[in-house]
Amino acid sequence: MENKFEHIEDVIAKYLAGEATAEEEALLTEWRNESPENENEFKQFGKLFEAGASLRDVIPVDTDAAWIKLKKSISQKHENGKIIPIQQKSNRLTFIRIAAAVLIFAGLGMLAFFMTLPSEDHLAEIHSTEKVKKEILPDGSTITLNKNTTLAYSVDHFSKKRIVKLKGEAFFDVKHDESNPFVVEAADLKIEDVGTSFNVKAKESSDVIIISVVSGEVKVTTVSDQMLSLNAGEEATYNITTKVIGKKEVIKENISAYSDKVFVFENAELGTVINVLNDVYDVQLGLANMDLKSCRITVTFEDEPIDDIAFVIAETLGLEIKKENEQIVFNGKSCK
Image 1 (cartoon, rainbow, N blue to C red):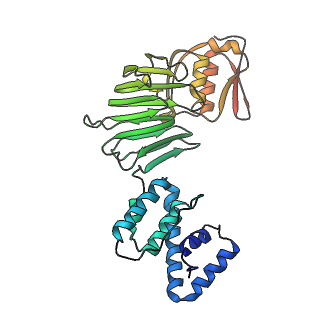
Image 2: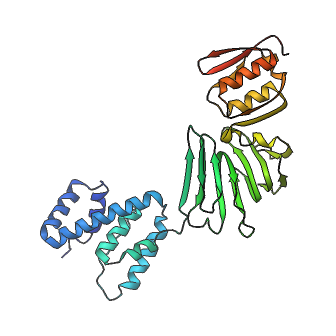
Image 3: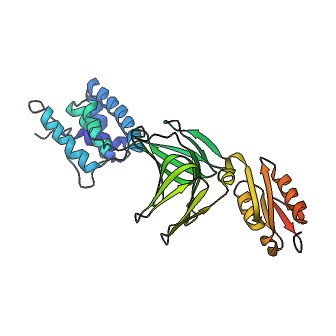
């Protein structure tokens, strides 16, 4: 005579996943009412299912490999014991449901459950939104994230492989370790520290990645294996589309201006000055007369309010300023 409860573990799993039919729910109710032991097993199953589902949210699972490995583990551990069969359906239950069913009904411990999980890294992610954010990594290196930036690294392997992935812009003050280089991956670039503080700008909205060095040296490697060394005061610009990389000299003080708000401009065009300041301040600067872009100015600012900075620029160049909403506009026929 066929045992109508033979595959009750599948029914429980489907019930917990919200996929059981009315007929299956009735069968489950009958089984639970048959004995206190059945009810207790159902409750244990529910707890394990919840724990497994939470784990599955953060660790991706290869369900096919997990199923094969779990079945093999069952056969090895229970050659002489009674095993309630679990059939793999064509649309296949999720791994968590299957594993939980096997654990309850085949008597496997938590070890068998975790044996089926892939050995993937646990990633730590650091996010900044509308404010600059400073963090210290596990190796003691300090990073400053510009607004709207994400940095990720492996929690499991960072002590042996100091690799971070960057989307956005960040300044790195790296704790040097010759035996364990610090590597930043941004799009298809790798930037390796050689005792350095440097900045990487790799915004998703731009096709250009900019690497600027304040101290020490970095080595930049492209996806096509082009290599470039940068020393203090040098900057590399890489075009993701054309795969072209080049370098030039820059003013070191401006590299991390979004962090310390120190700006040094030497005979710089007003258009360039405005672009640099607009990257840092919420209030944006603009020009009513685009001919003013080529005006040149030499000036230094140290953590000053944007209103004061705009006033100094206007007075230096003989321009007028007008504030409109969140924008300060420079106007004039020409510069001094």
